Length: 407
Image (cartoon, rainbow, N blue to C red):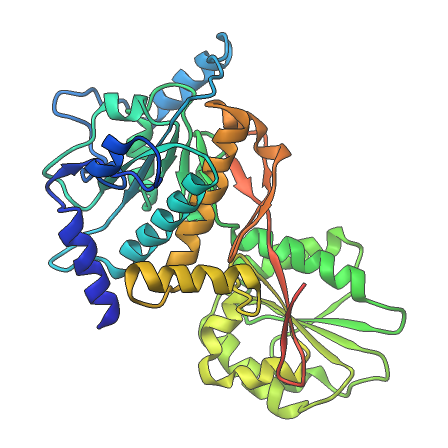
């Protein structure tokens, strides 16, 4: 109920069919302060009527031609133009998750403004087809955050100016397009989680330990990927599909790697494994955040098995900065922040900082600047393609005293 009230408050302030300009920076330019807090334009990601719509192959070919031309001039603007493209009003009700992300983004804008960064913020509702965004509006943008769906991202790239990158705020499937498109995948994908997990296993495995991979049959994509990573690390392991096949546990540590594309298999296997090896000190479970999302009330087993988990998102509520964010969010929006609020805050804070530090061609420096957020970390790699992928993954340890440690 509180979340609904907060959403309605935002809707009342920045009507979805209106154009308003607000500024969040007290004490600067009195006339602007009297006008409002943030420049809020609600619109869609569709091209304006009459705009040419080339197919994806044409986009790729155009990008290849641009690479041979002189790079765009790098400018350090007096005010950073930020565009946020989210499905704010999908269907008959406001989308509470993406309004929450928007609220977190607004709080980041305010904090950045108080640190001295000047911004204009355009907000486009990608769920509203009645008011399309224009090429001109995109040309003025220094940072474009969104849209969410993979097809919408590909569509907006068709009308974006050259040397412009679109930030994917959510769907990890978008990472597949970074080879051929100017996309920055903001959250780390499941492959990055398994990469980190394999490194973690290699770091902790001692002589006399055994590594056992638990996966269902037939083997899925994630199981196949993890097997290839363990082999790359030179780790010897066995594979089983049932808890009963584990056999007895030797004196060394048994490092059990839970991998599957099947949520039901994960749920059943973790419960059976947890019940069988209750509080054994020489058992360690390695897995990704997918397990946390599938076992629900059975999370006690994660503690009992000294679980090591990799995750693209994790909030350490004991941190001072996290507590400060929660207090500010409550005061401003009269409700509690969820995961989407933290995600919006972290992403806008990082990418606007990039533009402030490195100018309008900030994407050239993504490999050089990392940042630890409240929920998400940012450290980018640039494969052989055009886009960038976030490789930063958090390590989480579940201890049998029911504590969780973020490493």
